[in-house]
Image (spheres, rainbow, N blue to C red):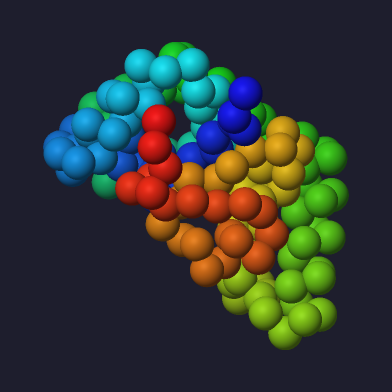
Length: 143
């Protein structure tokens, strides 16, 4: 069995967008037709949802909610946040931060979420996330 797939915010945004990129839409439909375990992390949902709320896009929120109902939703837990803090500190100590020190740094929370369930992160943000977890671009993952 393959690893679960955890979508980052960019991919989740593409999946919930009303006017999907045609190539992505075909890929996503093929993926949903397989037995692949697709996961939405709470932090990715937060990143997409806050912008939809800010922009007053109720249809986008409805689509996001539908994805949450049909895919597995991984809430943030204490163990995820403890691991995220460790990843954040290690990246800083190596001189390779993934965000400004005053920011929450959703990338390390997403990475810790992936580590929690041993997931492959589907992202277009390979540079930051691949330092912590296994990543792949959606266009390079064959369902």
